[in-house]
Each structure stands twice: as structure tokens, then as C-alpha cells.
Length: 409
Image 1 (cartoon, rainbow, N blue to C red):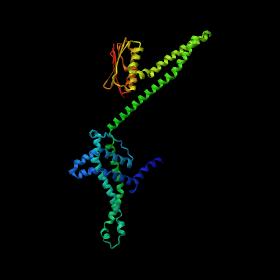
Image 2 (cartoon, rainbow, N blue to C red; image 1 turned 135 degrees about the horizontal axis):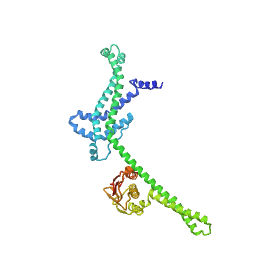
Image 3 (tube, rainbow, N blue to C red; image 1 turned 90 degrees about the horizontal axis):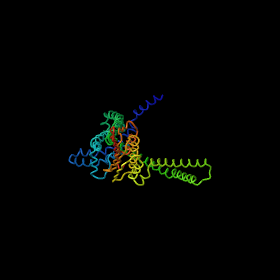
Image 4 (tube, one colour; image 1 turned 90 degrees about the vertical axis):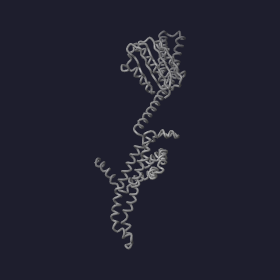
């Protein structure tokens, strides 16, 4: 029963009467486009001012396109996104007109729009002719028999009436077909092309990714502050109280003192672990004193000699600073774990809006991202801010990791 119903619904839509709402809606949509094509028709009908009108149309691409979009939005419920970015200057306009998408708009206003407007005129005229012709017999019947009008139209009233009725049947389909054609061409020629859509999507993805990276970095900062100002301070206070008890309580049993000593040592170990955790989330020195001081702390804590050379002459976004810090930290961790190196060098430079990091060591080399997650993690971290990473690590060493990051997102 449900399949029969689904087949009968299209049949009812096809067999709509000529005076149906859809037929008048299609005709109204077509008629609304006729005034918008008048400049092109004037250019064709008046060759002497063709160049002037052509220039006027080129300068009116934006308002004409906006009017066509408004027509489709209001009468067809179709939203066509805008393409040209308004710069407010003639140079910006002519720069925009050099793009392929804008020339598609010009082609619509010069060729497609006038042709569709011509078809719309025929449809509108056809409706008027159909209404007049279909009522000829009635007007002749109302005329007195002695009227010369009745004598003149006596032989034509029946063919005209039949022709008018046929037009009333055919015109809804013609109007619907022309309206669908106009809508399809307008969406294709006034809307964004495939390349423009992909570029727009890429821009959206880049912006959303940058926003996500900033949000993650901000959340790391918040967690770092909460741990530093909350749990770490409480543990520090607890360790101080246990240390005070350890030094001042002399008359307690040895078993109780042993418990106090163990609790004091555990509290100090927890403070050290929490301090490392906080530093791993987001080092406070990076926010307070900048990238140079933060990297100096990494070099000082490394279990092998690290020569650090930092020369930062441009402003760096906080998110990029955090990525640079953790990239150097993870790279040096990999050197300590796998390279069997005796020293490492870290160079940080800014030039041309890019931050360049070079981490090298004198280890055994042979670093391969396919054999572990260390280099893969570094590559993913740098890619999160549109950075790039390259690794040169022949077997036998040395290994050089080069990272380039944008200074500002």
C-alpha cells in the first residue's frame, strides 16, 4: 500500500491544473528576471552605445548578481553564496574580474540572462494570449447577432478558444521547464565553482584547526595553573608540615616516626612528579619569560651537554612558542633514549615570518619514523600549526632535525 501511495504522489504533481499555484510561481519567478536583463538587451538593440553599456554591465556585476541571488532566494528558496570580496576600490574590482568565477557571472548577465528573459517574455505573452483566446467564444456569444464583431469572429472563435485552452495546458510545463533551467544555470554560473568551494573549505579547515590548537593550548594553560596553584600548593604545605613534625617530634615511638618519615618522603616525591607534570603541560617560564628562557631550562635539565643558540627577532604566537618548546623537548628526549650521543646542539632562528629549529646530535643516527612514534609525534605536532619537519639521519650519524613553524598563525 505504501508503494502505491509513493507512485501516485508524482502523478498528482504532474497533472496539476494550469491555474495551479506552482505555474503562477514559476511565471512570477521568470518575470522577475526580465528587468535585470534590460541592460544586455539595450546593448544588443543599440550598437552605438554597446561599449558604454558593456562597461556599465561590467561595473554592475556585483549589484546585478546580488539582485539575481535575491530573486532566487525570495521566489525559489535557493541560496547562492557570494563570490566576490568587496574591496571598495576599482583596483579590487578589476582584480576580481580577472578570476574565472567572475567571468562566469558576466557570461550569465550578458548571454544566459537575456536568453532566459526572452523566453520569460514569451511565457508572459503566452499567458495573456491564452487568457484572451480561450475567452473569445464567450465574448462573441455576449455580442448581439447584428454586431459586425460577431460576424468577423464567427469562423475563428472556436479555433481561437481551442488554441487558448491548449496554451493554458502547455504553458505551466513550459514555465516550469524554463524556471528550472534558469535556476540551474544561475546556481552554476553565479555560485562558486568546484575550485572555489574547495579553497573555501580548505580555509575553513585551516581556521578551525588553528582555533582548535589555540583552544587546546589555552586548556593546557588552565590545567597548569590549576595544578600549580591548587594541588601543588597543598602538597607543598603537607610536606612542610610533615617535615616540621619530623624535626620537632622527638618523644614519639619509633614506629610512628618511621610513618612520618615515609609520609614526608612520599609527599616530596609527589611534589617532584607533579612539578614535572605541570612543566610537561605548559611551563610557566615560557609564558613569563619567553621561548629563550624556557629552552634554557630544557638544556640545563638534559642529562647530556646541550649547546643552545637562540636568536628570535620577530614576535611569535604563544601557541607556536608552545609547539616549539615541546618539539625541542621531545627531540632531546629521543636523543637521550635512542641516539647514544655525547652532546646535542639546538639552534633557533626567525626569518621571513618563520621560526626555524635545528636539533642535531653526534649519535649513531639511523632515525626512522616508520620504526617508532617519536618522530611521528614530532611531525604531527609541527603539522598542527602548518609547520614542516625534515630528518637527516644516516646510519652512523649524525642526526639533524629541522623544523619550520609560522611565527604567527
